[in-house]
Length: 352
Image (cartoon, rainbow, N blue to C red; front, side):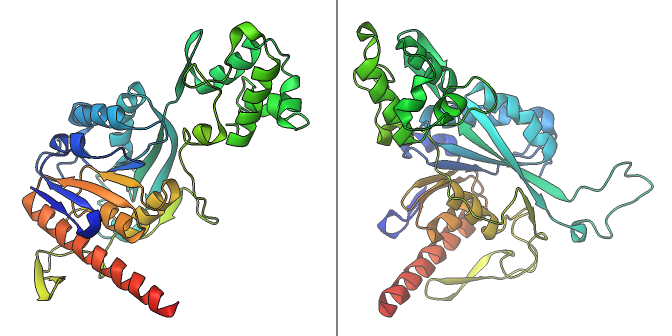
């Protein structure tokens, strides 16, 4: 069953994401919050050993659908993420960093038997950020982007030092863009276009074109920048996010009832989902690596927190959920998110 929001604000697939990926557009980012190996939901594995095979068909689909600039946020326990990391790396996903959710002492207060635990109590959960590994084709074969950059310049027959002149800098081109060590820096599109232009104007004629993505024409600044994932920096944020588990009004409980037209409220006292993620966290992640109108995939929706955050930010989420109860709650959350977004937009228009 598929539900589409007004003006295609979201697409909700009631079922396994494996049956939906083929109809979803290319994602700018994927937010994965699936199996943890802790038997947290029907279909979860009983331990981290089974996680690799659980995720394998999904990772294969993500890898086929992804653009070079697609990112992946992978939520899990520390050991669960460690178990799946080799699978992600083997399919072309390069690790960027880990965000740690520090839930604080309230998460375990009164629930630890110090005589039997034999370890420090766990109050954290992690979310690892990945980027697509970029390898580019050239006359001498396929190479990682860093190697390709240096190889193309050397292939032109020009000395490395001349790259600084090409870019209009003192030494940044050879020290950053063409280096082979850990100081390597991705050249901005403008600098890439200058390198390409200079090499094709002054390089060995028999090697034309240099720095070409299609083997026909030199790369442009716009095409080069499109190969790198977006990053919207927020000052003051680090990779450790401290917030207690949800116990406030944001935490969904039980089922939803209609309180007014298009307005739903929780009814039962028990939590609807074992591990509901804060919308604040999902908004941070999605905002960091996407722009307005970008496509966000949430293949293991649960309560669709990432998709609700995406709607609020003006992105286009595609979400799937196999559990019928969770899927219905997710649909209502998404409908409310669209309604709230439209109300805010109307208010902004009135103020103008």
